[in-house]
Image 1: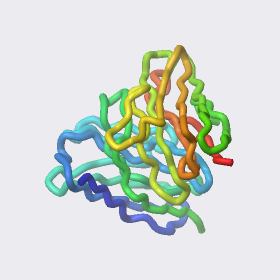
Image 2: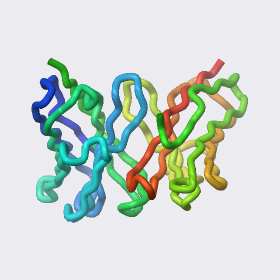
Image 3: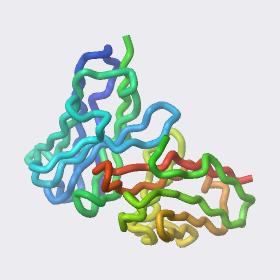
Amino acid sequence: QVQLVDSGGGVVQPGRSLRLSCAASGFGFSSYGMHWVRQAPGKGLEWVAIVWYGGSYKDYADSVKGRFTISRDNSKNTVYLQMHSLRAEDTGVYYCVRGLGSYDDFWFDHWGQGTLVTVSS
Amino acid sequence: QSVLTQPPSVSGAPGQRVTISCTGSRSNIGADCDVHWYRQVPGTAPKLLIYRNNNRPSGVSDRFAGSKSGTSASLAITGLQAEDEADYYCQSYDRSLSASIFGGGTKLTVL
């Protein structure tokens, strides 16, 4: 069955960096677009980034553009989110998500368990 | 403030029917972008409930039904059960923002 295992979260000071990882299994990883979606404590869901199945197309929410980088290693069935210049407002649970549909109209059919990122001094 | 507007809360008694609205604009739902729905029990990851406006993934009960018209969409839940208590989110794509967008979420309470 499809499994997405998120890791890499933790407590980090403002301005520092952190890298999240998501190990995928149970499906043809290289054939799917992958995303990160986050949720601030007590708040709603926010789409963060997409990496298309080949890795060449990437896009980001305006709130993280220029600070976050999404990437994937299809040989390891893993997707990453490199986060720089972290801010307090980046605090939340980050979910790795499998996407379906096109690169500009998609939905999320499988979610990881989430990894908590806390940005605090 | 979310681009897609949902009521903060809805409630209903067991066995009743409730609907959750999701109001967008001409740059998202009205631009022929599909609407998808998720259910989230607090402390757990969201789960896909409806995709492409009115399609249920395998394993999702037919008590859940989605619809879309103009710049709005709705999720209907019939035969309300205690385990339906959760937060529900709509999602679409906004062509002006070039980004996926979520509604603010609706907390369903079963009385």
